[in-house]
Amino acid sequence: MYSSALLAIIERAGHDTAVLVDGLSEAEFLRSRVTRAEVRRLIRNIADTAANTPPELRTQLAQIDWDGWIAIGARLRQADAQADETLWFAARSLVPATLMWLADYRRRHPALFEFRPPD
Image (tube, rainbow, N blue to C red; front, side, top):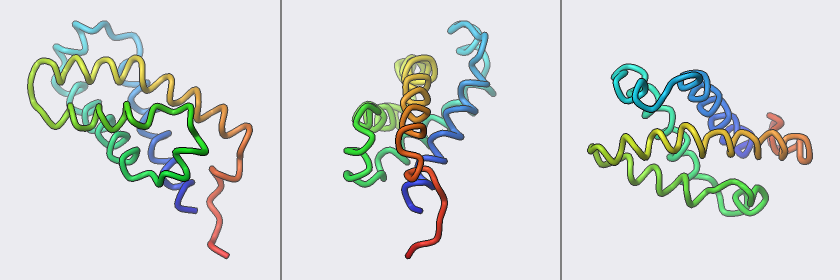
C-alpha cells in the first residue's frame, strides 16, 4: 500500500503541474508569480516524494529519473533565477516523461498502484 500512496502523490502532482503549464510559454510562466509558486510547490512535492521512495520501488520503476527528481528538489531549495529555469525544465520535460512512464508501469504492473490493506 505504501508504494501506491507514493505513486499517487507523484501522479497527482504531475497531472496538476501539466494542467498549470499547458499552453504557457516560458516567458508567461516566469511572469506569473501565482502559477510559478504553485508549480514550485507541486514540483517540490514530487521531488520530496521521489527522495523518500524506497530503493526497491525505484528499482522496479527504473525508467523514472529518480536521481533527476532528487537533484531538482535540491536545486529548488535555492531561490535564484536558475531555480526558475530548473522549475520550467522540470514542468515541461521531467513531469511529462515521469507521467508517461507511470502510465506504462500502471499497465504492466497494476498491483504497484493498487491501494489494499496490508496482509
